[in-house]
Amino acid sequence: MSQDQQPETTIGKVRKVRVGKVVSAKMTKTVVVTVERRVPHPKFKKIVRKTSKFYAHDEESVAKEGDTVVIEETRPLSKLKRWIVKEVRS
Image (tube, rainbow, N blue to C red; front, side, top):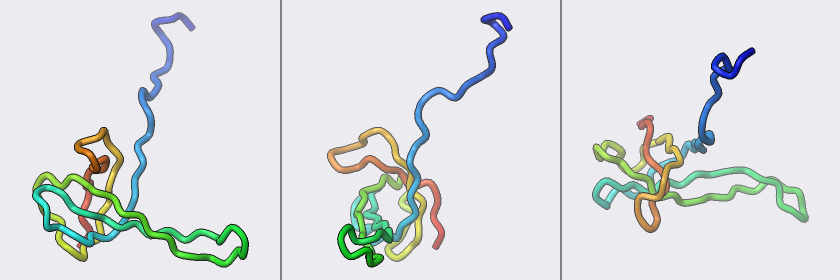
């Protein structure tokens, strides 16, 4: 196989994707999304729920409070925003 016949490879990293619930849509083009995950407690091994808040860019402002959304990691858009809304699942 010569150099000009190399197979195509994907360039760049795979972006993280999370599914969460919108808890605030009061800002312009920004929503706050909480993502819940279930992990075992380090010492007691009981399954506990942990939540994380993410600020996501919503260009069309279609997501409303209470909606379930899919967010994807992106470049930093502001001090706190590093995610964009990819899909809204009412």
